[in-house]
Image 1 (spheres, rainbow, N blue to C red):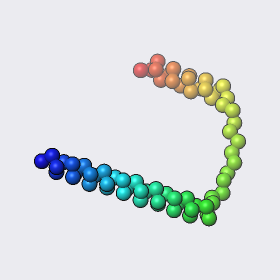
Image 2: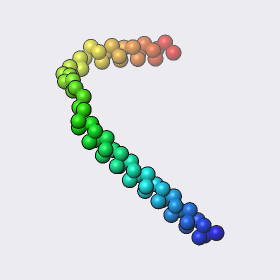
Image 3: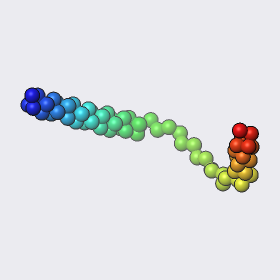
Image 4: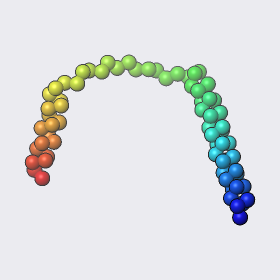
Length: 68
């Protein structure tokens, strides 16, 4: 009974290890493929958060709390 558990554990750990190895190989292959077809990178300038937007959200939350 104990030997069957050990065999089951070794088989399970081997399957997980093989899955992880295959996953790493596929990820490396995808990285090589993506080097040859880069997507256009859009540069966006983040605007600083305005105080009015934050206050509007707070006012909405307060109104919702007061209603219920």
